Length: 136
Image (cartoon, rainbow, N blue to C red; front, side):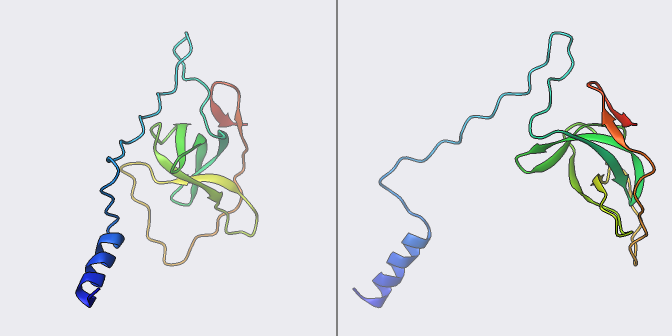
């Protein structure tokens, strides 16, 4: 083969040209989470956790979150809409381990810290009572 044909063959292989198979159809979407007869949402899938909520490096109540395919999402929280993406991480800068939900609700603008603020553990715990995630 000539150099030109080798280059063309390499380009076709790199582009993933596969003329011997029909194009793949995307998988169907997963069904929505069903509701119980009373109308409340069924238990959230994916390791739900009720944790303290940190907004703009300040403790801001509690949030029930669940794992989704792309990370953590809100199931219920005072300052977030269900489905909002958040992060579950240790937010304390005091040296303590503080697992918490961290996020920025729509419409909120956080200060641009040149030096990260001192964040101690929250003065409360969060608990799930089967209906809401609240301060305990």
